[in-house]
Amino acid sequence: MSSKPTLHSRFPTPPASGNIVWHHATVVRARREAQNGHRGAIIWFTGLSGSGKSTLAHAVEESLHQSGCRTFVLDGDNVRHGLCGDLGFSAKDRQENIRRIGEMAKLFMEAGVIVLTAFISPYRADRERVRGTVEHGDFLEVYCDAPIEICETRDIKGLYKKARAGEIAEFTGISSPYEAPEFPELTVNTGTTGLDDCVQQVISEMMRRGIVSATEFCGENSK
Image (cartoon, rainbow, N blue to C red; front, side, top):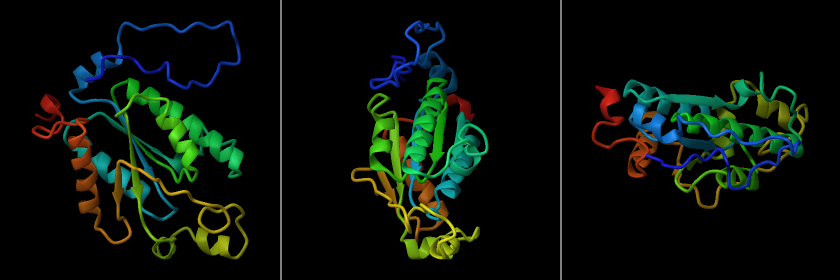
């Protein structure tokens, strides 16, 4: 379990006001994790639209939940209905979108929750900025690796078709770049590997890194 709170991130966003002071809680992350029976962590799924990020994140959450883990999925489209509803898809707005998600994910992690984020998050620097705000081992980047040709066949919303027709501007993979992770904690071939196998790869990596227990999955909470 973690012993130090990390809401005071290593590279925090400076507050607009200089008249605020951090309030230290008595119920800290380590106590919440002890109660939950597992570590809090950020599992960050990244990849092209249609690469299977949301599908995999929710399937992993289902497996964890059935084992008694405290979890929450932050999904790209869902978040843009509320917290990030005021943002578009320009490079500046994408950066702010990921900044907000990173801050919210840290709050969940501090609560001892395993938070799974499913966002294209196309820019490597934005993902690394989120990684840099938490302690080593708290951020697990999962690259959902699927060729764009396969992603287009899964385009149930017709977004790729619209983007290729010029009806959607700044669409990742077509008219806007996607920067694949250079050193992700895990690469999952979501283009050809079955969902159950992909889930097991993620769970196995979480076990290997001590986020969940390899013997009882989430300790006493799974009983």
